Image: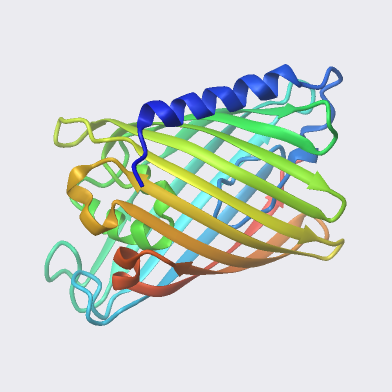
Length: 290
């Protein structure tokens, strides 16, 4: 399968134009466009702060992760104005690798700060209640650890491949569109994202990365159950077997009150990721900001 950046951009623009053309006059409440998934894009119409931890079960035979413990932390928050449907978001990642050896040699443990992402979003409601599109654009700042960049890449490739842009030191541009549908107890979303590394620490520009994802869920007053699929493709010819990363996640989330804990089982489906890990466990807690 060959993905071309121009084709992806054209598809994204077509989605945006179609959504704008059917925008609802009264706007509605952006919180109607909330879709509580664990591994897909976190951006939706709800104003939320989220703390997440992912633990991948690494294989003992894999270089760089032999007998290591990998932990990927992320703190993110977003706020969406209920009147204008315009919002902003922040994402702060931190990765830890500890064990007999690490990606940077014999060091017993490595803590790597990732690239902080700042961005804006628009929760676009359509003329059909429960149907809308989340449009977002963000900039990853050059805060990722330069000395421990490989530790970031290894951790995120296993834990959350769609966020690999936050592992590379330098500026990255992130664009995306996510249709969201809610009908009764059922909700679903799709993701189309484009990441472009503008200036990494080596002074060159990397090839773009495209992520396509989707999920479906069922929510009651007490719990939400979701199934999620993500495909991340790099146009870098040197990526080899890891040019396309695929993961499947099954998640459960408590939905009563304003604090919502959740846990997900993440299964890598591509051969490159399966060489590193059989599965990962993601857990977190999300709290409403309004």
